[in-house]
Length: 147
Image 1 (cartoon, rainbow, N blue to C red):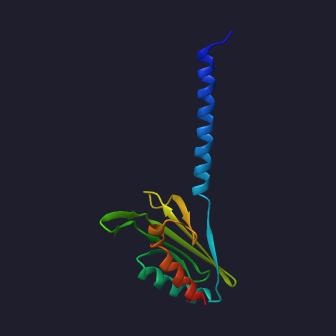
Image 2 (cartoon, one colour):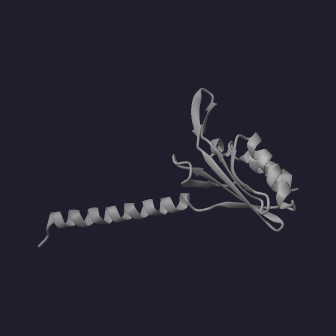
Image 3 (cartoon, rainbow, N blue to C red):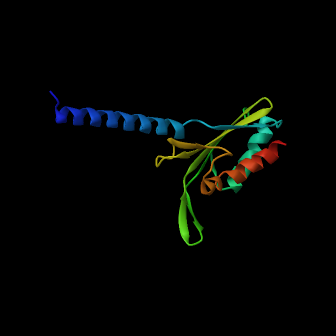
């Protein structure tokens, strides 16, 4: 015998499962690590000092810096910029570097309100022009530093 309640429950269950799966995929896509690899022949000590200066000039706060390995961890708090007459909030960023041999790996990501939890990773191909304003000048300066 056909029961409309059973049909409704089955349809709703399928709908719920599909939505849950799509949300899971969306979450996985935004949290995947995107590193930027650059050729860099600087000595770790020189790289750490010069890169720290670049980051500081671009309003990043140096949280950790290891002159032996070239590892740096820096933070930039969120700020507001305007486009025309519209205010736009640019998210807080964390930037990490690691120097290995003759290359440097740079990882840039937006962080949550706790200023630690990665929300979205960024690279040169990101499409959000407003977010790019907070890290592309640093990334370009790091490229110039490593030439």
